Length: 558
Image (tube, rainbow, N blue to C red; front, side):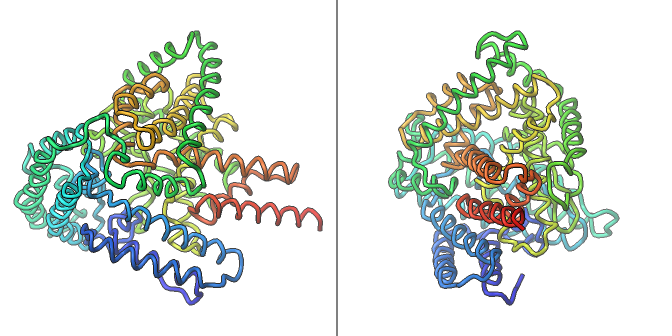
């Protein structure tokens, strides 16, 4: 991953630093050389990483980039270092407890359950990672003890859910998340390997998860009550949230501004939903909410998967009209692994593995009613697959000159694009009927509500009950999913701000580019400008689009 040019070489060095610190990230990117490794969960490792990032950022500041590509890469280096250092400063591992795969044992389960083993070397790496996992699990448990000593405690409701998750996982001595992985085809060593995997899971992984569970039982009487669910309720939490707003939006927005944007957007979308609902014979928001929830909870899982496949195929047939070349291979649609689906995860996307062992995949929850299973099915499919994340992230792997650092998923860019893709799909007529278009409003209303609720929880002292109530009153998605959403915001402060913030910025840049270029505006060309430099912070994206507009304007005058 080396380069002779100073800026790309520093980008590669930063990427190596990040992958060494988080081998799970490397596995998600399909970099097999990290598949036997686990992160170092200690605070000392975080301090060392922070020092390395500070040194890289200082070197980036001293560079003099040559050419537009180097300027962009230098901007990404600085932003990634700054964002990661701000996240490290929050010490989230000290108080984050969740049954969702955000951290701790549930995150390990999610990584292992999605593993693909194409050959004996991959199987050996899987076993090596399993053997190292108890130490990592105990390290994550120790971080929670450190948080308790500082008065930085998790939220009681989330602790209860995590304890229930652990009890379910430990109900069988061989949880399928670890032992349900298929051995390489026609491998003579499969039997001995399977025996070794089961021995490690039974004798080491299970007890380590049990130790995590036992600490949660100790913490539960001291956990934060639901009316102190926001991060601002813990020592240093207000400063943490201020950092995280910047990390996840990359924009100079305050919690007050984000809260107001959410309320205003919600009001506009409600008007649009009421108009479509009236055409369907639905009178008022509550009738829409009831009907949409019934559609989601009453859907047949396999029929829903088929409908998602059909929507994605329809979008793929039009992709060349919307997206610049090269276009990625078709997106796969698969049911989630059991351990992930049971956690209540909404449908989501994972990019292709670089070794070709798994394509870009839209994972569908066939076990629980979530977003993307009712009228909003097509909107979520377009968001996660085509023209959304698959068109965005799988395509990046076809641009070999792009530094790997810029192929990371910067939330505001990646999720802003995904939400933009939902709207783009309507602009070009991909939705099948009025219910699907109403489903689009439902998903966008959720993103507007996220701005209201995330800031409400973490900046304005909202209780968990108030946050759940706001979503139930305003968002026409399944009740259980919305409750899970609030718990996700509690466990992952600020992340939910990225979606609407990113979409609004992309739409703003598109409107400015279209106004500047007039008839010479080219939609695939604009999308190339947005996507071809990879995942970038919004200020860098604004500079990229301005450069594209300048180039087009200059070409007009020749």
